[in-house]
Image 1 (cartoon, helix red, strand yellow):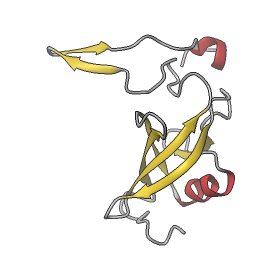
Image 2 (cartoon, helix red, strand yellow):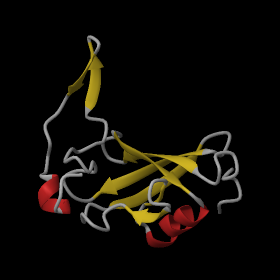
Image 3 (tube, helix red, strand yellow):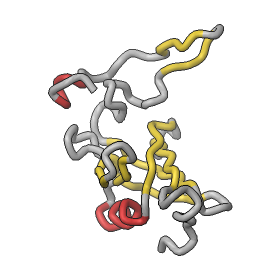
Length: 128
């Protein structure tokens, strides 16, 4: 299944753009190694490789805000993925927003363009 993917180009990782399958909104970007990709396929829950912690993590394992896999596409070079999901929970962002892309550059300033949808302190116990 992963033979078309080029894990070697970016030191064993592939960029994974996560999109809500229903709304088409980009929710987040993460990275997958071969093991994370295989686990995502096997479980139906999107799993990433954490570059900072150097380990696998399944989105939702601590928050309950899972990303249920709907489809995966790759680009022409096989070094990036578009993962369409059904998000579970009010938001994907660990800061309490629906999407990690809640800021926009407006007139030279980064502006929050939406309100948080949940309290990350209540979900994670500490501010992320």
